[in-house]
Image 1 (cartoon, rainbow, N blue to C red):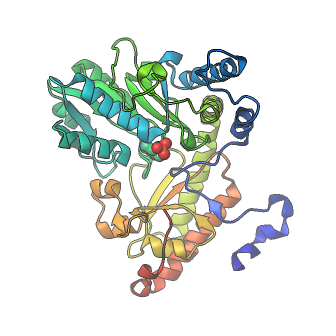
Image 2: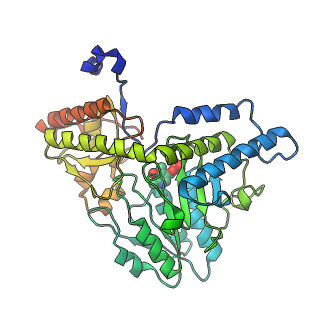
Image 3: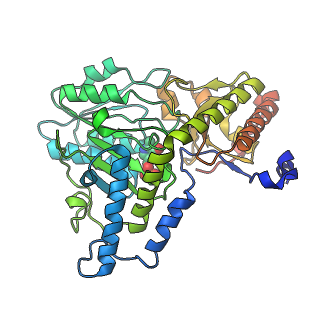
Length: 411
Ligand SMILES: *Cc1c(COP(=O)(O)O)cnc(C)c1O
């Protein structure tokens, strides 16, 4: 394979493995320390945390208690305010449908934003079909909401505002503190999908006035299929109608035998995030800025989407005018990144996030999303930058002839 003949091949100690994974907003690699913490829960400590009659159950319960403390410490809440779920999709559904169903009537209106994750948007649309009034806030070119729009959208019948901390496509960071303050003043609950922010930023639910917060383990170096919802219990207390009924686990808010291995992994990932997030962020920022600088030097036509000032340190989202992301990605098989077009669907539908930011369909369809992670190296960044420039230059020579429809992309 041609790509394997890079200069690093001559130096085995720094040998780089291809393809390079730079799609962290889709999922992060599981940290080996997380895997290590999980392993005993499959074999020796396999008990059901609800078994009250023997040591296997008590052991599992102790593991769950520890994980609950680790997650609570990450966002500065009490352990009994953490509800374990199957991931942030469930957490978002529970936060939105749970409050909407419990408090209506009389308060039933929901305010969210056009660039939210599908787990939030589709839950909101479902509620809208059930008769819950919905306001979708617009965003500017920078990807950020305007606080005046939010203030105007909150009415006397509003129960919940749901705005994400950081966007999963363009990485822009919403003014969470100001949103929390506004929600407090207006007396409405504030749900924040913090999935993307937690691996890079300190989030304190007390300081930020957050009442509900969604967490996903696999976006912060933990395992897939497990997450959590923070539900404020005091000042104000948030009540929810559960999505799942059954054995009454998690204070009746989420029935179902607890996923002990996953929850232990989430707990370990949360503890590592609290300890290493700042150092990770500083390192990733340097690497991300290097990636951008190299791309702009080699391909000055590149257009960056979203604010660079208010942005996660590990995100970059760029388009090359006239070039489709599918063709670009097919031209660089050694690079695993995300694209602005939803390749999973039969039709290449341009990203709803970029469209809401006012990016043209053609440009949105050409967007490339880079997501750096804890283990990204400078060699990887330099390789990716060189490949992007090489692919864009090659395709740029004959953009009209690029056989976009012949390529397939996964997920
Ligand atoms: C990945 C993601 C989700 C969904 O999380 P899962 O745990 O995969 O269900 C929700 N919101 C955002 C912002 C995400 O990036």
